[in-house]
Length: 329
Ligand SMILES: Nc1ncnc2c1ncn2[C@@H]1O[C@H](COP(=O)(O)OP(=O)(O)OP(=O)(O)O)[C@@H](O)[C@H]1O
Ligand SMILES: [Mg+2]
Image (cartoon, rainbow, N blue to C red):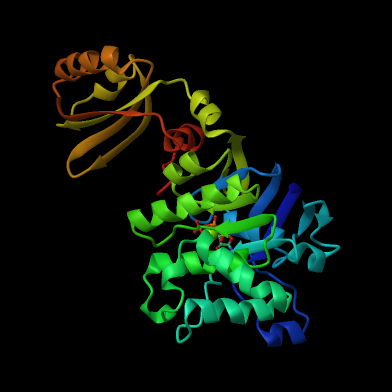
């Protein structure tokens, strides 16, 4: 699957039918949601698009899923152009897209799958075997005859994944597969996704959870404002920032110069005032060397360090280093 210079422009606000009828010029603001995305997803890999809200992840995925036309640029799914042969593309992937998690609540899981199997024109003689197989893949076999309305969020999400797996597609598009799930259900879902890879399937997913991108993905594209700001394996991405460790400090008192003193010994990745404290995220080569110096520097500036925490580098830090913002802002 690849995308070349993929761009999507939306118009903000609405145009009334009167304006349309009178052929008034369209004065709406144009908004570039996807801004020249270039990527190539290899067969058999889990590829993640990581980025904050509104970065353009879902829009990109919807274009690849042939649900939206790109404004310009091109995309091919398994070698087939999404613009030229959308029907052919649609036959080759399974998708769990946001806003499309509809299931029939008054039916059991198995009945839901039977219904969708018919809808997808699965050959009837294969239906039973496929249903058993996908129920097993998402670990719902023993609850298959329960009504979906009695399912937990995590189980529903897994059933939606099962639905996407019904035609046994070589490619899966998963938009925020763990959104809204509790930690246990999210972990469970991630395991299911990893199993898909071991079966040789290709997975393209979006997420705004950096841990998820880190744990799950072979490669990650970090997306911000419709652009890819970095693309590599999680390990390589983390290596790009010149730090081995991240030190989080909470400092009390309005001390002038404390930040500049600290920045002599490490890089200030982020500073923020909250709850009367100065919260600093420092990138450093060695926390062992930096932390004692930080205490000296704070003392010299007349400030008190209230809390110190040393954490490993995460993709969040990569995003921070690239954009100056946190993923969750
Ligand atoms: N149909 C549309 N019309 C106008 N603007 C849209 C439309 N769909 C999306 N947008 C805008 O495009 C931008 C990107 O949206 P998109 O849903 O792709 O972001 P995202 O990265 O998936 O974010 P999130 O993490 O919140 O799901 C947003 O500013 C959104 O408001
Ligand atoms: Mg989205």
